[in-house]
Every structure is written in structure tokens, then in C-alpha cells.
Amino acid sequence: MKELPEIVNKAWEDREGPVIFTTVDTDGMPNAIYATCVSKFNDELMIVANNYFSKTLENILAGSKGSLLFITKEGTSYQIKGTIEYHKEGVVFDDMKKWNPKRLPGHAAAALKVEEVYSGADKLL
Image (cartoon, rainbow, N blue to C red; front, side, top):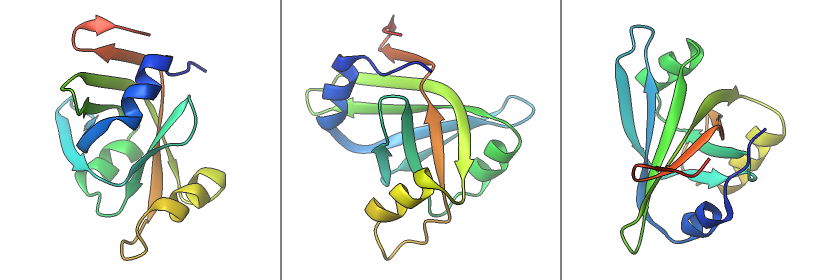
């Protein structure tokens, strides 16, 4: 598995606002959502809590790849692309339940496996 470059790990700690989580449907039509309940599980997996997925969930269950876009407080953007795993139980799910706000349902954890990383147009991985 590929791992996030150190510069992206540092940028993740300095991010601002929600991330944009994107999937595609079986016809290739993209779907993007703002996500605030996100975490880095390790250097290989980025987690988005499924609190209210609809189209996003349909796309994930149909085998969509995805991307996660975030910006730092200094205005530098980073995009992480990869395959999505969907966890309704297990270690990744249990970890999400620890940091996802208790008032939200946390139906499952969408885990984006790091495959490519960009900063703007520059490919970092």
C-alpha cells in the first residue's frame, strides 16, 4: 500500500474547514460532498464517517474510486485519490466511532486507500 508523503501529513494537521469527498457513479458522473467528520486512520487510509451519505453510499457500494480534497490555513490544497473500502464493523469502524460526534449516527466508515496524492497540479505520489 502507498503512504502519504510527510508534507501531506503535516498539511493534514494544518487543514481548515471541511474536506470535499468525491465519488463517481457507474456512468462516470462525479458526486462531491462536504465532509466534516474525517480522520487519518494511518498513513495509508483516510476515513470519512457515513453520517448521512445517499448518492455517495450508492457510488461506494457500486465500486467507485474516490478523492478527498482539503486546504490548509495557508491556502495550499491537497488531493488524495484512491480506492474506497466500506466498513460497517471492525477496527476501522470502531476507530471512527471514537472520534465521530456522538450526536451523529456514524452508520459506517468510508476508508479511502491512498494511491495518488497531489498538491495543485503537482503529483506528490
